[in-house]
Amino acid sequence: MPTPTTSSPPATPLAALTTLRLGGPPRRLVRAGSADEIVAAVRAGDAAGEPVLVVGGGSNLVVGDDGFDGTVVHLESRGHAVERHDAEALLRVEAGQDWDELVAATVDEGLGGLECLSGIPGCAGATPVQNVGAYGVEVADLLVDATLFDRRSGDVVTVPAADLGLGYRTSRLKHGGASGATGEAGADREIVLAARFRMTTDGLSAPVRYAELARTLGVEPGTRAPLAAVRDAVLELRRGKGMVLDEADHDTWSAGSFFTNPIVDGDAAERVAERVAAADQRAVTAWPTADGRVKLSAAALIERAGVTRGYPGPDSPVRVSTRHTLALTHRGDGTTTQLLALARDVRDRVEAAFGVRLAPEPVLVGCTLD
Image (cartoon, rainbow, N blue to C red; front, side, top):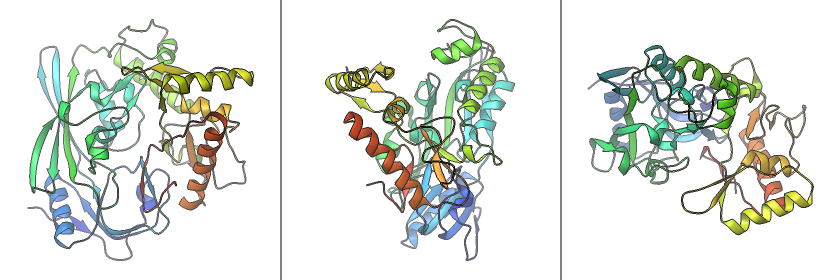
């Protein structure tokens, strides 16, 4: 079996492996360039009785300033393969493959399905864990199955998407103590090695469901559009919100959306609407859910609670994005402690204003928000 590459102390700080550019060093860093190397590295860590953290693009990860007291396995497996079957195709991708590079490749190859997920940072292995979604499309809509390393049995298994418990920004892989590209320290029971997606082959997108995207494209919701046009429109929208990673732009140094859109019962949604109306503010965007509850816009709640873009100001090393209130950004000389203090401030302001407690979307390692 191939041998993964291990760094000698001092290990690379996790700040260098995360999009927030925050986090202290691990005890040991192993770079794994294939599925076999990933399995070997995790098995070695387990045999040594130490915690193991698997990191891909680090785009959904907040690491404490003290780092990680164990082995970090950095996913560096790359590549994808396509099996075409008339109007459909199966796309198989390695866990360490950069996600947006993959989406760009599928668009170039005339494969439809992932185009609305353009511009999302990170690696492919994280997408089933988080059930990544944007602009009306979720991984759950396309995922066929995932190849996992089961640390309990020591086996490599392929699990159908229907058995992964995919929900809004969650899955059994996340809350069951498993991870693809990020995970809770030492808790990963299953590791994503590869995933397969069902794609179309006619060069057109999935039906455009998201109203903002439809307006940008100049089409009616439900219309299918050329793949390249949809990708370009999504990237334009994401850039406008600071959600496309740019090394030169600190306003994009974030973990993406820091809070999930809260799902509340009807009474709670009505209370929010009443408080917003009493303050003569614009209504908070809300969507009905399949179980009869209501999903509220976290960004709108943050704004209505008085948190502005760029809060708390230009002198702070961590602040709310100047383009989108849902992203918390690092300006280059801050700490995770400072970032979490800002997150608590934002969360507590929303709870005080509306009685709704926001939950973080990123995985927290070596730190807590409570």
